Amino acid sequence: MPALDGVDQIQLEENFQTFGLTDRFHYGLTRGEAVWLGVAQLQVETWGPLNERTLTATVPISIPAGTMAKLLTDLESMRLARSLSLPTATQGPDNYLNRTMMLRSGASMVVGQSVVSGHGANHPWRVDLVGDSAWSADLQASKFWAGLEPFLAPKTRDELRRKALNLPPPTITVTPRPSRTRIPTARPTPEGGFRVGLPWAGR
Image 1 (cartoon, one colour):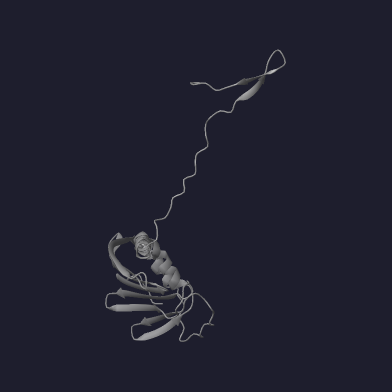
Image 2 (cartoon, rainbow, N blue to C red):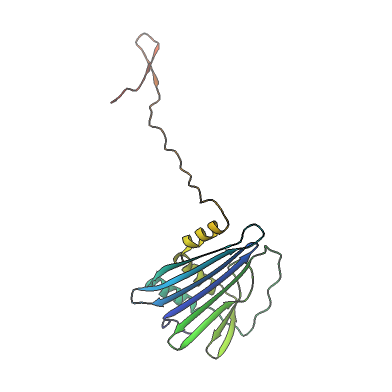
């Protein structure tokens, strides 16, 4: 991969589809002095005979410059190849995931696109450089995306999905604190018997 320290704009697209649900997420980020600022445009669509609705949200997002610099440095180590062998087909759930990254550095541009449908982290990526293209099957592109995930409005995405699917809000389990009530103890008496001592207020 070419050096990415001059990247100043990043566009991310994520489309996910499973039975009855389609996610379309777009993220745009622009480099600042101390932080990357941008907007997440989120759309969740449900479909089927009993539940058809579309919910959207626009959320401001930000990523510390130091965090982004580390992620871009790691992404530079992505190994490229002219061709890759086709992955072995395996049976899995009806989930289809497609991700696209566009990294701009002035007039230059790097585009990485996931070219295998499925739900998982280890996907081959097509990398389109300026005037050239290549492939990558290592984990660097997926790790880059995973590093961005906490900043891409995950709570809003989950809330949209819950509302679209008519799911109840997540439950919070409260563990009761142990009682401070003292347990009566039996103490020996001078007569050889036992006396039970009970706690009293202020003791």
